[in-house]
Length: 506
Image (cartoon, rainbow, N blue to C red):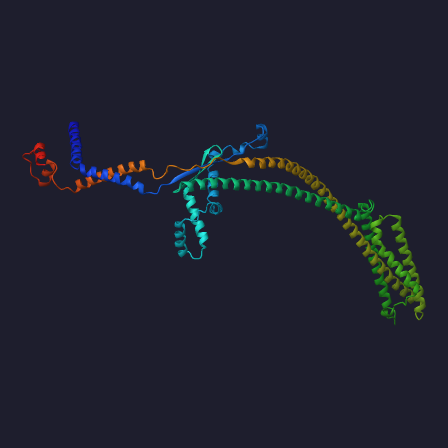
């Protein structure tokens, strides 16, 4: 069985070989023609020349290795060769509209006739866009297609430009390298200056904040001195004395009002007496004593903030008030006797008690009000003092922290200025052209060897495809088995092909 299979395979390979031999010209002709045509067509393709410039992007350190590590200068340039984002950044920079504009100014790459025709076509479609902007966009697109950026070595970038004109490729590559160096150096110097300005601004900012805190503390200290109280005045004992005296006054006031009500009730029972007409005609003496009592009562407020409530000055004030009140009551008694002579002694006594009760109630009411105001003022003043003291303590802590931070920033700024000065010095040697672009002598495109190989393969494929198609559409009998299968008749004999006769016929 295995032998049969091998026979079939052998017969199949022979048949393929026979087909290839029979159709050999159909395979050879396309192979040769397409190969020749492809190679000749390569001369119709516009040759493209390439030129590259190599730019260093690493600084030249003039410091010792230890000082470089201390300043953190070595680690910044250690992994650039594997950093694709750096390549992308450089590519985006040198193909930006700013670089294209500078190329136009330096090399006049916008003067090609082909560009003018392209701009006219685009302008007809986009009349709202300025033609100069359209030209800039076309040049930028062309630059992106013909510029390549790659790492040539550690910290070295190769900028490669392709152009049909060798001199143009060289000029664009060199100009891009120079523009890249100028712009990067300018950018880093600007960053250094901004960093220095930022450090100075930060130090000044915290200086101003510290001055503001110090000024606020001085203002609070001054206000605290203005509202500061004597130790005895601000004590809890003094407040307790004030509150106790106020409670006694309120109690005396309640008793005075009750006694006044009893007197009024008695007066209302006196026949022919109109209480509304019971008003005295004050004398100069009475008016003077009343004003003196009012001043003494009003003085409670100022006195309560200067002296403790148990101080002799306050006690003297109270005695003076009581003495004045007693004098007013005595004068009232005399005035009643002189102004109400029509009434008997008992009635005049009731009238005198009524007038004096009015005086007592008014005095106690005014005094209680002033003492209550003094107590509230003292409580408010003590609360204000406590608030000022707490704020001053907080400000002391904030000033200490701000001073520490200000001193730290100043020291950092001084160290940063040294480091930035070093970076500024390195920026002048960091970006530099290692190898300028050279004039391309041989075109990099088209690659005629590769095109020739592709032509050979294409010719072989086309020829093989033609052979396969002809064999598929050939309906003649090729094997004995085909005759038996299609006609259903047995084959009795097969006449072999005589190659000599076939050759003689030819």
